[in-house]
Amino acid sequence: MPLVGRYLDHLRAERGLAGNTLDAYRRDLDVYGSYLAERDISDPRQVLADDIEAFVGWLRSRTSARGRPYAPSSVARIVVAVRGFHRFLAREGLVEEDAAAAVGTPRADRALPKALSLDQVEQLLAAPVGDEARGLRDRAMLELLYGAGLRITELTSLDVDDVDETDRLVRVHGKGDKQRIVPYGEVAGRAIERWLVSGRPTLSPSSPALFVNARGDRLSRQGVWKIVRRHAERVELDAEVSPHTLRHSFATHLLDGGADVRAVQELLGHASVTTTQIYTLVSRQALREVYERAHPRA
Image (cartoon, rainbow, N blue to C red; front, side, top):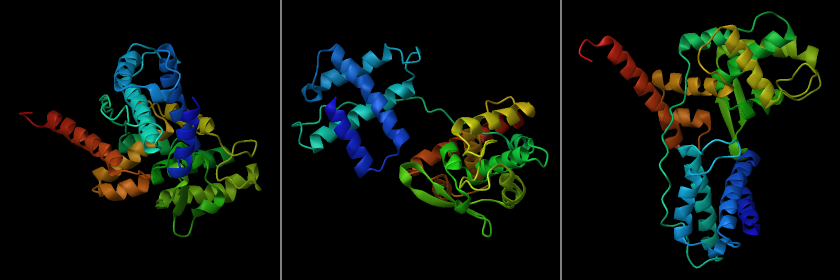
């Protein structure tokens, strides 16, 4: 649908959304386009509120490209994209009224992030051993993922110049090309220094990338994921551990330690504090589990 392209251009120019986010919007609106085609609606300006209400039911009866039923969270996300698209059409004067204005977003169960315990984090961070380049890189990478709460794409996009070793700060390129400055701790600082001095020069002395692979190229998202999983399996962690698990653990442990939710929001680079507040639910859940195990009248 040509109007979808116009909407995506608007999201890119006016809201500064990153390429991965725009691709997600495009995929969700492609699903909507398939639904409209089934109903012989060739122009989204012909859509009525009843059509969008029926779309929600249609989604729940279909399977995704992976052959699985759409999860409630996926249904909710796709409907949000459709609502935004129709709101755009109304604001641009392409339709007289927003057909999706009265259509609510289906409620999705809020999945709590999975965080490791402090003992588990310490086991994982201690897993890379040795003074060879790969071990030094993995230790520095894991320490920075947990020490600064980085997303995997934020980690892989880091250059050496983004790290201030003196003040232990890292310049992070977040979603929507937004930058933030995040501190990291002394232990991470020592690991990064050892990697930069003794490890990285043996693999790629000329690349600007902070973390590189054995060929000297910038480490990929998939490469980071495999490294984290390899070390998690090495120390026999039962939990499903990914790079994002360390980010979840970073936020949860900060809040458990008494950090203000607004400060954690800033460190994580969340646009809304509502996103950060989900980690307070993790902390409350942990408290309840302790209470139920320990209190005689729980």
